[in-house]
Image (cartoon, rainbow, N blue to C red; front, side, top):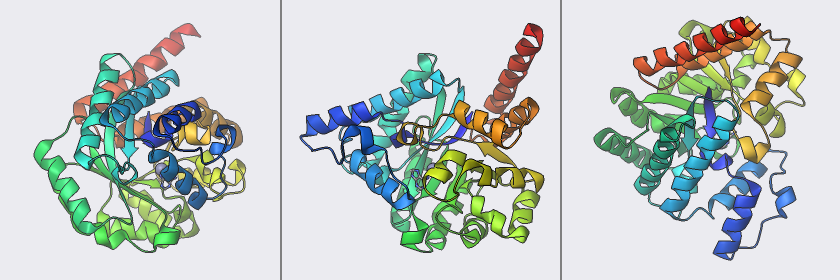
Length: 325
Ligand code: ADE
Ligand code: ZN
């Protein structure tokens, strides 16, 4: 199960190369070096460049389908997948969300990963844009949409969380799941802001909360799940290497954490690879990995029937494994 993955980061270099050729746009860098960056700012600049090549609803539908196929190939049965409408400048927001939902529907019918959609506000967008998006989701209930996200680079854009207080309150009233990228490009204060203003159910990253013991204790007390992405945090320069990552310290503090890929093809990561790395470097046992998967099922933005089905899949996996030993 994946709770923190961006659909725009599930596009291969060769797909981007052919979209660029089709659009008559020269490659930003040779494809072999396209996915090379060492800061969040460089990453997001490149991300914005390739997203500008995504220009039709058919492309969006296909990208969603291919993302579900990519996740399925890694053994993932369920995913809450983020999309940033602000990156798809050639498509109307509603057209985009409907097209991605249609791609996920087709993929699910074909037995691929059950992907749900979490439209994510970009921090430079307006409060009004965010509210209109939420009201439209509430009125139309577009297929597969289960939550609301917020992302972007707080180190560049500053303190933008309070601006979205009303949109998040409305999302809560409408029964949408609420998650936010925080404590990646912001310090602990960014994490505190999303708890105080947005009343989130989960936080994407959240890792810099570890710098503030009282805040870490608050995350544990309030049972806020952190959707952690170890390799992505190393690639964007937050930690020098995986052994320095604080994931283990959150577990010790009683904070529910899940393990995620964030940007699979754009950062050459997979969920299975992240599990393997965490097990090796942070000494997690098989039971620890199962517990992280259970926490993902607990925090998924699906309804209670689907949640019970996700736990039943974990039960079936464990039974099969016990029988084959
Ligand atoms: N968009 C895609 N990945 C992101 C990340 N790690 N942080 C902020 N915005 C993102
Ligand atoms: Zn992310």
